[in-house]
Image 1 (cartoon, helix red, strand yellow):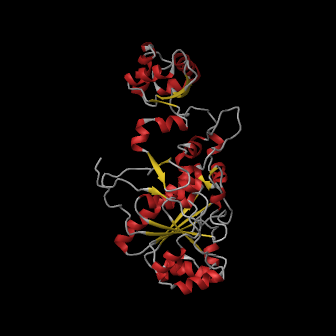
Image 2 (cartoon, helix red, strand yellow):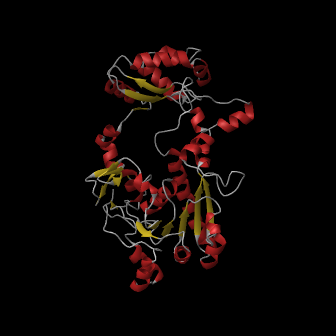
Image 3 (cartoon, one colour):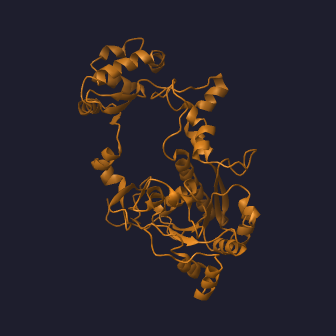
Length: 408
């Protein structure tokens, strides 16, 4: 890899982040990862509620730190007309506004796209909400858990004998944030051709509904409703998670014909390749329980490392089931994926870096987590040209928050 960090592809793009909690700040982090300047607007008294998330270490929310490192924070009270006026003026001087209020809130505040784009025709307004800006459910509030159930994900996640299950992390929020970042960069690219901005409308549930595969097309084509199938995919066999003799777990994904045949060789069962029960994927799915038992029994005979080595030698797609320690100690992830979050009270900690890599750009530095309103004065001075006296007046009336001592 080149030692030249390269020019970030979004260098020169300024983002005003009005989003809180998870999905919209994830979009902000994605944009920041590739060079955008992200200015986060927070309530000057309480800040983003994500600052109160657990787990915490040394008084700092780990989740907030992961999503917001490298951003700037300005404290503005949007409940006050003067605060909303500041946001309107800021929106006239940035490229992107990311927000996650309930649909209609910006319009009620006089900050709808018609108003903002009249002053800044090139503005991209990225809107993340529970159910989107249109449709019968547009006014419903929504968090990730609701998206994970409404999308159909929770219904198919788990085992037949267990209840529908949501994941123990912000799954829908993360995917919505990634989608919002993609929509934002798409709109920015289109702006280079048209000179005009756009509105990006992301519902929390829609990106998750898309990645669920063939649930909808299957039902509408055949009437079949997919149920929970545990670690199987419902479409290819053998595939799953298996326990080795030492109690450790690994995954095998023999999801196409050639890999399945190589797996049979690795198992020492070449006769399965011509067995009518297992010779094709359709046959394997029809006899999935029987085939899965063969795979389980084979894996269970040896320690995980030996099984994985044998699978690797036969070019079968497989991997260990990693916990956090496994990931941190893995040389591949240390070289390619994990980056240090520096300049905080957390000590030397690692976080996952950018979700993709560009040959011309080495990636960002992750340093510092802003305190509430830490950049209020510098941002308002730099973008709006406010004087120290004007900022002091706004601070005395609690429209903006004074810059506190850095908390991170």
